[in-house]
Length: 314
Image (cartoon, rainbow, N blue to C red; front, side):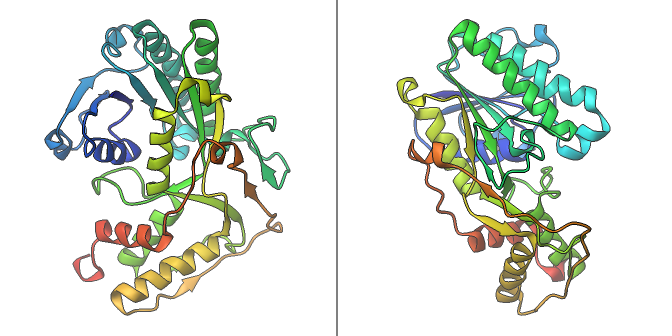
């Protein structure tokens, strides 16, 4: 298997690269406009290709020899709001350009990483892939555009496509410079170490689905290896299938911190204008193909703390 990670020099790309390179017979090519962390070049079987998904000419030949592709490129939520045109170009039009190149090169499987943000505020307790999408922020709009462009190429060129709508991811980065500290769980861990307290801007009653990095990686491998005749649908929710409040997550971070460092952190909460509604991110479609979340949140939190360092070192 020869895997191309488009936009693979970021947080998720680092963990995917680290996981894939430990498996025999897998080579990884990272397509990125910027150099990744220096340690990535030390991983066996990793090739770095400098290219910009917004420049179609720079992508020529990028998929040659590639059997499987994961499209990760995109701005985070904050950057998408600040630079919406760039977000649309990277997550949307860039995906179209890469998908066309992948189809030309005969790539066997194209996996597009999307987000639960494409659903927007649908007013439903249960989020399934069959719901009409109504993104309410620039990030969700850009990811939805990418979904549509990839589906367009799949239909016209016969590209085997899987679109994965991720819930709220969390987990340790491959390097501490990765852009992952705005993620809820990761942010709480860094607050604990750097500030010696946990502060929630809201009451924390909001329900969310959180997917651990180990489960996310297992899900990606499943969709890379799944035979085309079993893929069936193109769009899949990927999460834990379990709803938790932000406050419960904060309490879990607090408990692990106390276990590791012997200190019970103060926890401060804010207020909400509206009542928190129940929420369920339905992963039944992915489960039917063999996806089974089983990660231990406490273990993931410990791994994040390992990257954050000890309070004494800050």
